[in-house]
Each structure stands twice: as C-alpha cells, then as structure tokens.
Length: 111
Image 1 (cartoon, rainbow, N blue to C red):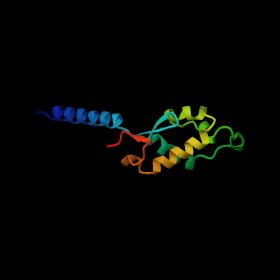
Image 2: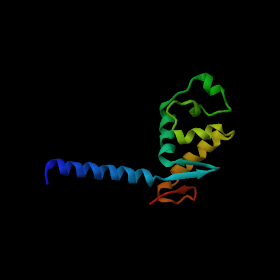
Image 3: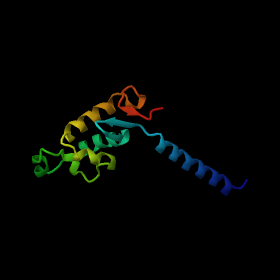
Image 4: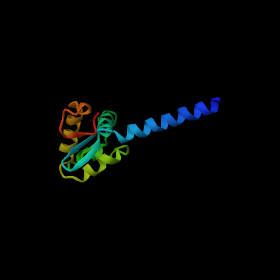
C-alpha cells in the first residue's frame, strides 16, 4: 500500500471521527429550548470576554449577550423569550452540574 493510500485512509478515518462526535453531542433541554452543551460553555466564555456598551446594558428586557455577534445559533431563539436572562442563567447552572455525565435530567445525548 502506497503512502498516498495510507494518507487517504487516515484522512477518511478523521472525517468519520468528526462526524461521530458531531452526532453524539450533549444537549440541554429546558423550557422548550434545546441547546448544545458546547454552546452554553461558549456563552460563559463570551460573557467573560465581552463588555457591552452602556446603551446595551440599559436595555433590561434583553440580556446583553443577545446582542453579541458570536452568540451561537442554537442560543439565539432564547433571546426571543421574555425570560431570556433567567433561562441563560439556568442553562449555565445545568451545564456546570455534570451534564456530560447525564446526572441532570435536562441533559441528553451523553455517553
């Protein structure tokens, strides 16, 4: 078997692993929203890195994160809820509560 064939097999195996990981992601289901655990973890990182303008902070009806340009797509529908701030807070709490081990009933798709 030539080196190109081996390289092709390794590349194919890598693609399969990436596809398997994406299909077996952990999801959090809460108040009718289903979001990926990785998105909630990203939300926490975005909050630490981003300081919204005072104008955005004055808009209390929407959390400042709803205006963040890098807000993950699966979290954007939460911003349409009147309870967006409390939902984001709860999602972050659930994510920290051993969601990857499926100890929380809101978490699905764990191994």
